[in-house]
Amino acid sequence: QVQLVESGGGLVQAGGSLKLSCAASDRTFNNYYMGWFRQAPGKEREFVAAISWGGARTDYAGSVKGRFTISRDNAKNTVYLQMNSLKPEDTAVYYCAAGRGPYTASFTVRAYDYWGQGTQVTVST
Image 1 (tube, rainbow, N blue to C red):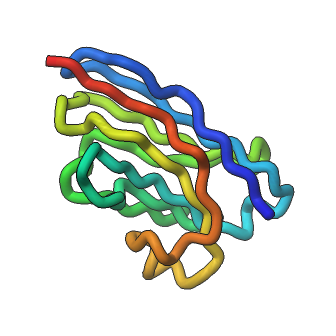
Image 2 (image 1 turned 90 degrees about the vertical axis):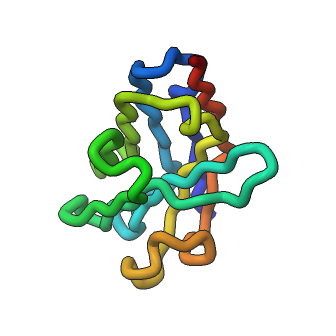
Image 3 (image 1 turned 45 degrees about the horizontal axis):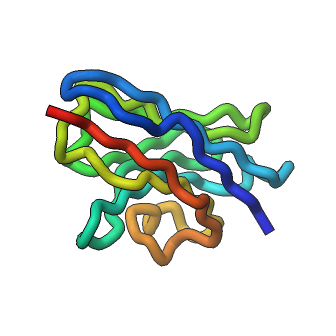
C-alpha cells in the first residue's frame, strides 16, 4: 500500500504561482509513474500532468501546457507540480496519484493504483 500526501495548495491571485508536492511512503517509488489530476466542484476529475518512472517523459493537458511543470525526485520519494501564470479556472482540488500499468494510459484516472487525499488550490481574480 502506497500512501501519498499532497501539500502546497492555497489561495493565490491570478497570474501567481504555487508549487505542489506529493510525498510517497513507498521505498519503491521509482517503480511508479506519477500523475496530477484536479477536480473542480460539479466536474469530473481531469488529467493535469504525468511523469514516467525515471522522469525522462512528461505529458500535460493542453490547458496547462507551458504553464505547469511536473518533476520528481526519486531520492526523496516526491513528485512536484510547479504552477505558474495561474488562472481562476485552475481552481480545484489537486490530487497526486501513482500507477504501475502502461505509461501510455497515464492520462486516465483508471490507470492509477493509489491516490492522495487532495489539496485545494484557489485562484482569485
